[in-house]
Amino acid sequence: MKRLVLVVFLISQAVMAQIQFEARVSKNTLGINERLRIDFYMNFDGDNFTEPTFDGFRIIAGPSQQVSQSWVNGRSSFEKMYSYYLVPNHKGNIVIKGATIEYDGKVYKTSNVKINVTDAVQQPQQGQQQQYGDPNEPAVSADNNLYLVADISNTNPYINEPITVVYKLWFSYNIGITNWKELNKPKYNNFWSQNIDIKQLVGEEGQFKGQKYRFVVLRKTVLYPQKSGKLDIEPLSLDIDVQLPTNRRDIYGRMQVTETNKRVSAGSKTINVKPLPEAGKPADFTGAVGKFDFKVTPSKTSLKNGESLDLLVSVTGKGNMKLFTLPKPVVPNALEMYDAVHTDKVETPLSGMTGSISDSYTIVPQYKGSYPIKPIQFSYFDLGSKTYKTISSPEIMIDVLEGPTDTRTDSTAGNKQKVIAQTQFKYVKTKTELTALNEDNFLGSNLFFGLLFAPFLLLPIIILAKKKKEAIDGDVFGNRIKANNKLAKKYLSEAKKQLANKEPFYVALEKAMHNFLKAKLHIETSEMSKENIQELLLNKGAEPTAVADFINLTENCEFARYAPASSATIQEDFDKAVMIISKLEKQIS
Image 1: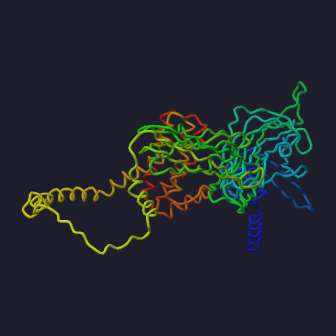
Image 2: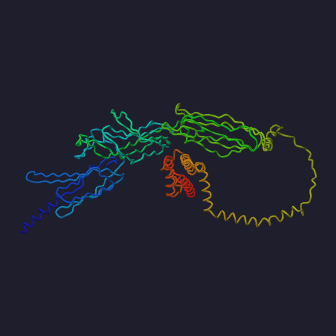
Image 3: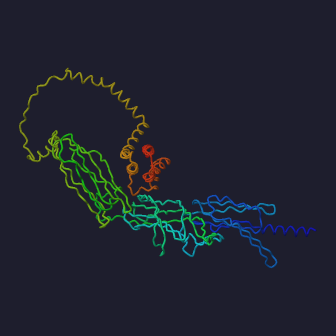
């Protein structure tokens, strides 16, 4: 009897040891544009199968059930499997939790499966597409009939030479497209970028991979590289709803289609940027690259005292118009010159920026006379000849017809000229001629007593003034706020003038933020990457929240130029910029 019980126990233990219920996946690492197959395999016929929630994934097919049972050499085997096809919703490590099933009064559960979702990967070539084994699989695959391509005009440009990136969605005549959404937007680190608005998507025809395809231009972007070396353009990825034909037909003989989902990516691109040559680079070169014309134009050259003139320094042409500074004129001391008012009329078609930029200086003469404004030089790198060119303006003579005479010349420069004109050395006189001075006695005079008691009369005034100054100096927080707001408004003065014009406002706002960084961090435009700005500000003692607000507002300027915006939103962005610059000025050490 004991031997029988032992045999039964061993048999039951063997049966329990052979029970299998596990989750099997087609791969543990996949791109965000790939599919994942997961099979829940068991070697017993269980009941009440419960699938997991598949958090982080979307089910595109399934479940499909497969059952097989066989007898081999008198021994039976049983297999059952539930299969799903999934696409990830985002990148990162995603955990698929276990499924459950009941068998012989017990509940079994599969182990969790960890899936690593990476950036989009290159799609398989024709003949290499994955087979999914779905009985409802369409007659054609989207893998070989749908492509997203980034066409780059030049992969080996100079610094600040414009290049274009055009994103085209190619699809064959075998499939249809109903909708799509962006998963990952392309990032242009170390590039100045300008998106070109596409008002309406238009389907066109063309040759792709040697065959006739249809295509749609989804996005056009103009880029200006800001540093030399290998620069990467992160890919654009799309989630597309696709209609695929099947082998089934309806009662009228028409082919039936099935709706599916496809994720495509343009892939990462590398641009090899050449530095501008050092040979022949002018000392006054400020980074202008393209083809330009340079002019310095006064509003008038003859004026009276109290009148003013406007001196316009302008550059017209094609190139990186918004990425360099204009030279500043040098005027004589007798002419008072005020800060420039900057104006740009620049358009950005697919070929690059074109138009004009100018600085207008208001000049007010102080004295009568003729005053020259020296020639001004403007240098740029000509992409056509691959050489530096310099344009020089002519000398401008300003005639002030009326007004006081500048006596400073007689007392300074005039004396020097007279001394030079005269004999260099004079004879020493051998006799001294003394002249008696008739002066009143100073002691006892009104002036004597006035000077004697003046310190006692001024002492209370000095004490009151000193206390008031100490009170003002003691208000450190208030003084810093005033100084910060004054600095912020200085940088944002141009943006404030454009509050009624959305696009010029955000252009001026973005430039003000960049000028603030140049002044505070002592960096150039080519160094203004998001990571570099963040690191420099944090190292300077800025708070992370203020840094994040600054970067978010800077990045939002480009988007806001084309998005609908009310006057209240523009005013809100302006006030936000004043507050952020004030905070950073207070925090940066």
